Length: 587
Image (tube, rainbow, N blue to C red):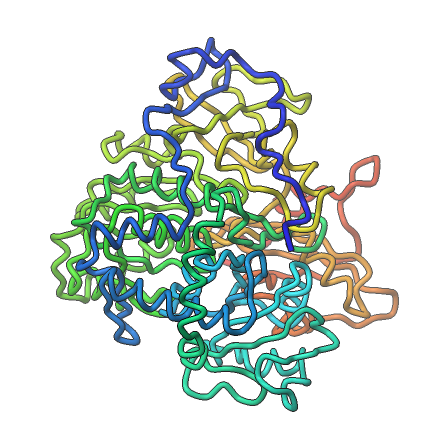
């Protein structure tokens, strides 16, 4: 089944400043207007993910491809390629085909990366399911895109994935593996569990690895030749302002080229060893990390299933890593831990910090204490594959902290006012981007796609400014999205969930500043008349139903919500009052 929406990134591109400007192409604004275009010296590569991987094997076959320190896997590119083909053949034996959606619900594990490349090998579309998702979110995601198979880890931290899938699909208890017919998950036919015991109705991952025979292996070559760089290959869910997550759909072309350009900016090569403590379900780990390393033949080092500062520092030291990715809070945690560790970080050189602004003090400390003198900053969104701005390794320290760098190759960006006019340099407006990196669309949601991509321009919803040199600063958000520890949280989604509580009359959710996570989720709630509602009851209602990072840390039960004359909630008033109240409590 093909994607039920058309790619809009190649539609008529609308009006913008002339394209033949050397200034615009070099990343500097044109004629004092907030429009920039990335250089095009390096061509876009029209290759698929299997073609990219095959090239890495031919050039770097004997080198380390990946190291999973927690579980002990350590494979060369040659060895990893053979494993990918075995899993891909097994998926074919299960009846999966090009265009089928295959979900992956797991923390950072070897099977995650294997599934990433094995699905691409047969042209199936990998669906990234957030490991923090609970039952309601999982049900929505699997049904929204029509997943035919789901690969999952039995459990992780407080999440019992097997129990949750059995609650959604109790039919597993009595069905043969691969023949699930579940009322609540009508398209899901196959559940694959990593580990030794899959439980009833499911395959183990190792069983799938051994299912394929000569017939399936022969088919791989023919499938490879039939794939197109423009094919959809990945769906990642982003929280929606309408209350439901949206499935951003990316192609081979999107992911491969963005991964190339991201790692070009940090000068990654086959001599490098990239530490990836960021989650694989996110573009940071899957595209910028895994695919970026493969594009250069670099080694990938995974410290554990999830970020833990000591394990990451030990991996950096013992694996002689030269590069590392993370959000600012990760680097702060490592800096705190480093004082008690005896480590040799002399091999470190570069990396990427993204997801939130980087304080100058943190950048200075990672430069001196972690030897990360060539650390870069990125900005982007899942819908743009993800990166559209990135600093260079030799940009001044202040530019790497106060800005998100300059525009990426083959990407155009304009900053516009509410009427769609390009604003002068230095003025704030909404950041819009177009080019190869713009997603194909939101899966099964043409209306949302049309609202977000207008004449080829992706409207990011972020407020930004450009300076005279083309450096971009993100200064706010057109809508009230919250960024908590690198996770995008949309208040409307949480509000609609809170409305399900029988005692909630009105719910308003917004972000307030937080030293550790950048922002924390706060909710103001008006109870229904006669209801007795407590703050703890609200949090308990959320627990096990929505991802932990979406659960409001601060809840206030109120009698009224500040409104404009026209009746719209004033979230900035609520935010200011909440900050003042918490400040008084802390005194």
